[in-house]
Every structure is written in structure tokens, then in C-alpha cells.
Length: 252
Image (tube, rainbow, N blue to C red; front, side, top):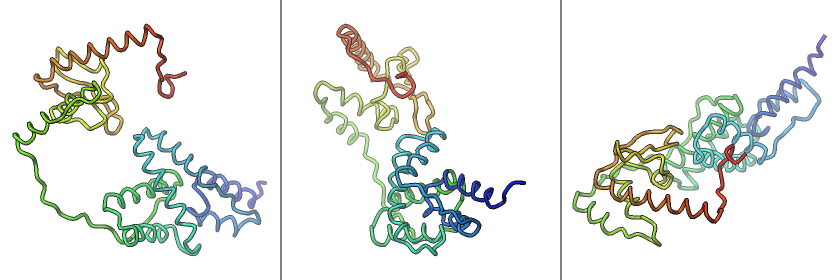
């Protein structure tokens, strides 16, 4: 016969072990106090954040998403300890989001970012989806958008100068001509450039997916020149045996 009380404690303990802290899941703490005489185990903030990072990385989300979720969960866990224990999880989230809008005067996008981080923590990390969160939401003001004319765009691109020998002007024109995000031209490698097909392979783009983009014909000569510069730098590094840091698994 399996001792029912011991079984309930083991089940609840393992559930909390995968959670952020007892403050985030008061329902589990109540289960322990009702059915056992053992104190509810808790995780400190750093252990909780490590658990969050593990789930984010297992789902192959972007590093920027991980940083954002960790930032907002840390703020939430700091704030939640000041709330009455009688509040439900939904009520705690509502109060936190309302305080952000009312006291912190944050933007709508920042509040949505915080909301998504907390929802992810409850649903994907704790396995405890929230129901019916009704907080004061920040509204996004409507602004009349202005797109620069062709002449203004050309004047802007011509005004950008290279800095310290770095092809800043070429990067700006790649951003405009290929529709790239800011970090994407900085991460281009020689193998990502297909001169014959006049296209670039953008690796690890949004959602961790690769995509192909057309390369404007006006940029081809400068791209070829930059390829030669990059290859010369690689040959020099090889000659002087300059070490190269490899990311994550490649380093092993």
C-alpha cells in the first residue's frame, strides 16, 4: 500500500520543484499545508529564473526573448511578495500590470511584453495557465505615420559615413535595400553571400528561421569588395594564430 499522504507530498513537491516559487503558485502551497505537515518547499529567485531559461531554450526562442522574459519575471517576483497572500494568481498579475500602467507610466508595448512573459511563466513553466486576467491596460496612441520620400532616403544614405574603416554606409544600404533587421547584416558570413544568384542567406532570423533575400545589383561590387576584405582578415588571423570563440556546442 502506498501512503496517501506521502504520495500527495511527493507529487506536490515535484510540481513546486518545476515552479518559480511558492509565491507564484499559492495553490500548491495550500495543497501541502492541507494534506501534510511538511513545510512547502520554495525556490529562490535565481533558481526560478534558471528554470525559466531552461524552458525558453528548450523551445528554441530568441535570446532577446529570453532576456525580456527574465527581466519581467524578476520584477514580478519582487513585486508579488508585497501582495496579500489571499490573492489568487490572476489577481496578483492584475495588480502588477495595473501598477505598471498607473504608477510606472510604461508604454503599451512594454506592458504587453510583461504580460506575455508572466503568461509564459505560468503556462509553460508552471503548467498552470492563468484565466481571465483583467488589468488596467495601456492604450497605444494613434500617430500619423510619415514615410520619407525617395529624395530624403537617398540624401540620408549618402550622408552616412564609414566609421573607423568599418563599412557603415554599406550596412545602412543593406538594411534599406534588402529589408534587413539591424543585427542581420552584422552577422553575414562569406558563405551566406551568393553573388551569382544575387541573394543573401539570413540565418537565425526571427523565430530562429533562415530566409533568402534579394541583393540589389547596385550593391554587388561593394559586397564583392567586402568579401575580399573579410577573407584577407581571416588569412591574417590564421597566420598569427588568433583564436576564435565558438558559440555553445561548437566550442566543444
